[in-house]
Length: 523
Image 1 (cartoon, rainbow, N blue to C red):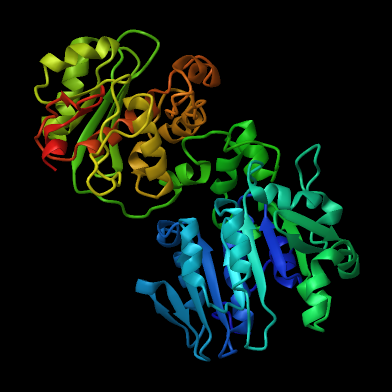
Image 2 (image 1 turned 180 degrees about the vertical axis):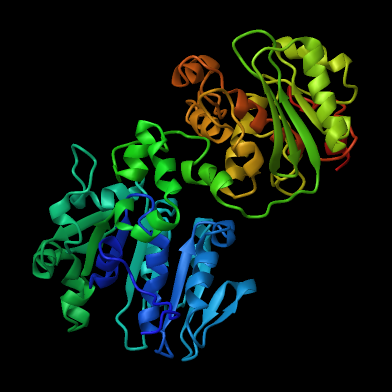
């Protein structure tokens, strides 16, 4: 065989086992780096010569499809090697010479499932199944139909999430004590019938039919279809990064990145543990947050800005970030500083990058209060200040816009920041990521370390959304403050009053204590 022929095929282990399974529903993954997405995209190729065959591959949000190195890019790397394939990037579709096709789509909201009413999809695939709701998954099974001669089937990938509905669904394959996949059950097929919110499992179709006989009473009177047609075969296939030899050859540093994480992250992503909680009230979803560093997608760079978390000679660090739109491009970190140094550092960034004062946000609590008199027009950030009106919050006809229901401005900005990270709006430049935070961690490592301290707090009787207190954050960070994350979240303050050069002129609504800007009043 000529050396210049590139053969597309699965590797032994996880990839081959996933593609070889005959189950109706195969859920695969568990650990990072096994080649889940690659394998998912190989599956439709077995039917590329069938003119009536179609595949839909779902991600939760549309940015997750087009992010650098994600679904679309991986599909280009694979399908461009196949003769007769035609991409249509605007609609994220692939067409094969036979007439077979593949489409990438999102299900951001549960209502989006109804966009697929009437569809017949022979192969439905979910990338990162834990990001989807239970309702989304089981409704789409009703669209899993075929008239092309291929029995309809479903394939999905996952990363461990013990709080997700998926953890319960695949529970038989997972050791309830340790959280690790049970080796002897890896790839073993079981059988299932759904009764509302209940799963009826069995080791054979006959066992399931017997357990679920009451479901079929009505069907017996109206059809002579074999009840076995209503039983789904299901399996879970786990794997680890060590099975992906190509990845380790091409990018061995990826393994190093996983090994350098804290014990919880390693247990989940390196070893596929389903008891480790990564998403326990996290404001920032782990994989999305990591994507700010690993993905090289383009983000909006339209407005320059500076955000500063002020500290002087205490234990906290003084952190100044320079932004081009949604990308953090440069950063200053100082262990110790005085008032003059703080002001000089902010002004030096503003001069270097031509940032107007009205696009500078600084922490005005405590020692940061003195900045107001030295940088005219800069925006003071009051952590415990009143939440602001969000220009993007929808309102009913005739009603007034009011601030979202957060405990304070800091909480509001953290929640908005987490949402926008999940949507793929943020990026941290390689230059910043690789800078040293201290003599132990890079900026990237420090961000990942601080992320775990930013968590949702309990909602009190007033119904306001909260985050955990600063003392609890410090406990999670071994006594440190989340100085990087505080600087990062302040970027959202500028999104709440986006009119350049217009300061917020405060006046109260009649009958409550909230404030709106002059701009919000005239809108």
